[in-house]
Image (cartoon, rainbow, N blue to C red; front, side, top):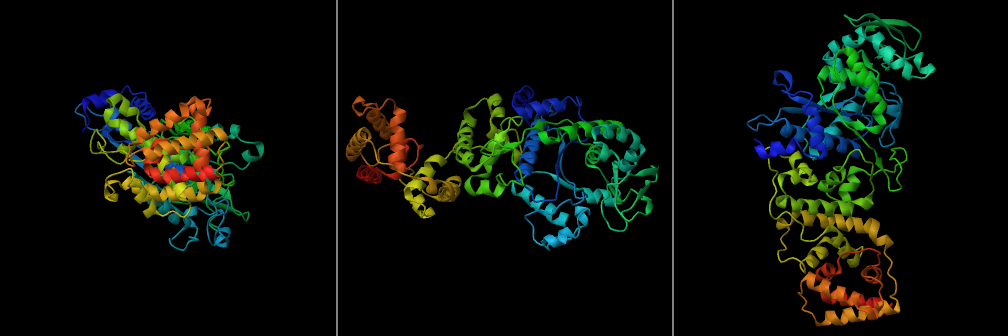
Length: 542
């Protein structure tokens, strides 16, 4: 049950999931007829394995779904009913063999057949599509998404799509009138809304089709060997062209909301026109921008310039990935390993703020929305007062980099004892897991790039003063007090720093081997006063 305050705030919130939900709520001002749940859909092509694009689409759709449940809640606070369907287009014909599969010859021998009718090259499931569908479900389950899985092959083969297919056949001419003007002349000659499946080869055929009887589903076409075939388009004997298939799916399932990438903008326009011709209504939706690599170029599977889910989760947390994806979907985002540390720390900063925020601010907080993805029990996500990291991920990375590429989890955790009184991993599970990720990130990206330099004359003088001041402090001095000492030395005009930034850069480059670094007071407290003095001695001896 949702509180009145939450519902009222959700209905005027400027956060993008609630803006989308507000727009969707106007579709059915009094709720969907018959009290039916509003249907959200995400689509997936199982010609390859699930990837980060699959994750972001299901996540963003779920965020809108959860927002809609509040925005369209009943007067007594009961959430609006919703469903989320993850749809797999496994009737699509295999056009090329993916690079990341075994037994490529097996797939090569089955090109152009529906994915659901091709043997599994991994030899685990009854078909290639069944394997990839299982991977998709395992993938979605891993992140705790609530969804219903629907495979196109099940709907086509069982006849569940037959009524919608008959409607496509009835409006075959209307669909051609929509699609033909958008195609090149050569493509027009072979284009058909319906793609028959050859009774001889099992291939999905791109050939002209004549509709003989829409009510019985009978069609006529020329097979690959030149023979004219008359057969039904129903019961899995055909599938539809992509844009027609998308529209038919919306029509058959009654989809109310589906978002898609900018690269499918034209498909969305044409499919919207087709569903109108079928007598249905195009779903509401959002067109999101694509991910870019660190050079600002579009991510391409063939180029291999993307970042996989596995790579992100090797170096960062699941929550940080959701956090990074959350902001404005209509803006392109660079997606590479360099954004991970900041995303981890920003996630925890936003998480710490939630309890201090008014409800309207909470609705715009990415973490509040992300926590609701896995919790439908009430209006307030499960957030405790102790939800914070004792040490930032950035600081943890600095510690690991100083300890070196051979550092172990146990060594890092023991150093954290300088900073935390309670060292029980059960009390800090998120930090405990991040240690392993910091070790991996340092090993693969930080350690190979570190290069300490010798201090300049004025920098050496400042380091000697810092060493002298540290020699006099209590080893357990608080990080803020240590930071004050560092500030005072940097402000000392005798050392000739134009600004504090130059002083801190000198500390990072001479002590840590990097041009960027942490708050030095926090680092000294974490690494230890005596260990820091040893770093200073090494720098002065360089």
